[in-house]
Length: 300
Image 1 (cartoon, one colour):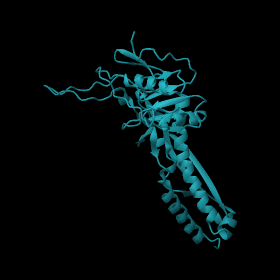
Image 2: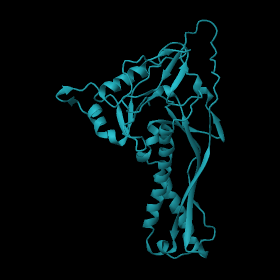
Image 3: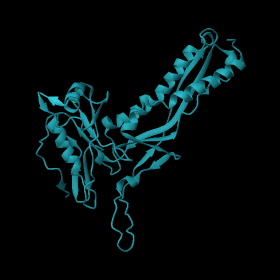
Image 4: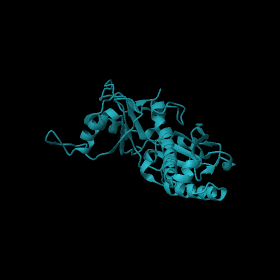
């Protein structure tokens, strides 16, 4: 193909067509399993509403107005970008095969980015809407809950975590009915998790935990650690806030005929934060946890 401005404009259209067709590929969107995707038009988005979990009440006389707890939790957008280039030789002699590969890699980079910033929330353990570390002690109503344990990954310990999660109550005293739908775990626990959750029989006996949850390896989790998730609700344990999607590829080189490289790039505005701590329970695998510890303790 001749290296002309008209042909370069044709390349521009081809790059965007390739990118648009690949961006919706769901094979690399792991973040969707544990994070609620929120579209925001603001630089800073407030999530104070996470402090009030709605529940239905009998309507006897006047409607009861919900009282929002005095929380402040904001997620501020961050700017991200990446780029690639096409050489004049690629353009003239390669038949644009390498360009298609680079565009597919660009699309993969977007979803990898979302996977990374959501996954990092688990290991970072930053503060959530109540001002406390996401994995730690939380006061809710008259009780204090702790969504961390020292359990190692075993069948019995999974059920112990499930009991703790099921014991969490809303401020009205009723249980949240938390489910256990997904276990995230470190790479070194993959074989063990398969035995616990994917084997119908263990040592010739019925395995009560078979099929209870899906499992997923999280590459960045520390060895021995695992986390039980309820991802069945509209608001998941984590939030991916997208202010600007990567919807098109921009040609960054304004005068491509003056050099031997044409640069293309994308940019996004997004960030990740914490949703409901009640829907996640982290275990450090140390073996220090006493399975007989009470589920809840009165707040002081």
